Image 1 (cartoon, rainbow, N blue to C red):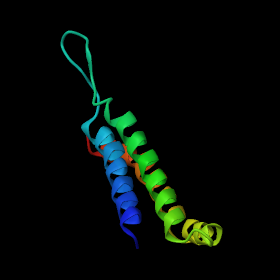
Image 2: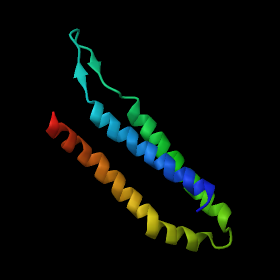
Image 3: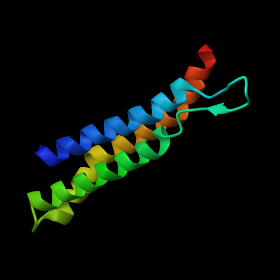
Image 4: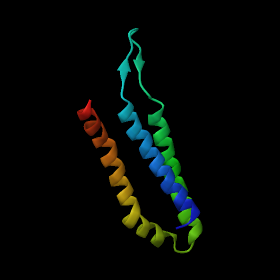
Length: 102
């Protein structure tokens, strides 16, 4: 695995951590009626996920330029499907699991 694929994987995990931590921190309303929430984690998580996909495509394209289509198809089948399923699972179930404890 090349350095750009490793960077893409790390960025994906950081983006997932942003979404999970948003759900874990939660939302509160203070005594003045102001909403207190870590809203910045949502766009930050999406930005990091987009950067992850860009690094993935750049890394795959530079690795094997003539065989990019076959390499991309294999990579999508093997790893990216797992990442997408993991992200949806973590994002949509984190709120349910975390809110059940509080």
